[in-house]
Image 1 (cartoon, rainbow, N blue to C red):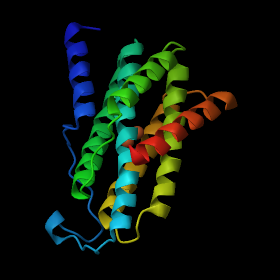
Image 2 (cartoon, protein in one colour):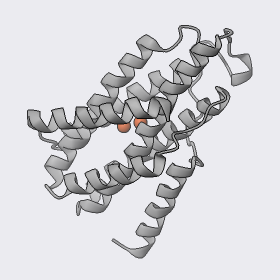
Image 3 (cartoon, rainbow, N blue to C red):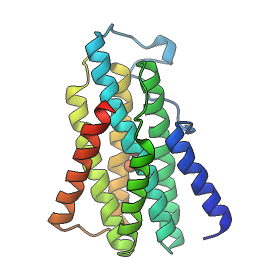
Length: 214
Ligand SMILES: [Fe+2]
Ligand SMILES: [Fe+2]
């Protein structure tokens, strides 16, 4: 790993936590809207807005963690092909990060105050997974993406029906996460044993319940 690479990753980490991520793809819009000005909007109650913001904050934290996980994996692997695959996924995760941050702003809310903590935790977990070698590392990413995808399914059920904009974002994210998970398995990821999967679910439960509020 060259010094340049470390600087790039450090910069990415800082941007993740401070919410100034760049999007390379525009914000997903509800079907039928040509641009954000023409989006059909339904007036939401204060409670609905707060709920939508809570969910989008959870998603934003998830993306902060995704940045850290993919960074750690990239630094851990020696395979140039794998590095590139992780880089590609991380790039898409950065879109997710930027979209959810923007949506939070539109909902008059803010990202989690604990982002540095989530980021550091995910980085540590990512490095730990990386120590088991590429195939476990890939299996870990695949399982992570699967859990996120499942989690986003849940959000589609509970997001306010009229919050078309958050829904459009979550839907695109779900499609991307599914593709990331598949790519990780196709690249040789192994199925993780049940205790590892259960532990991951428990950790994400703590994260999601906390980030909904703080
Ligand atoms: Fe994502
Ligand atoms: Fe992903």
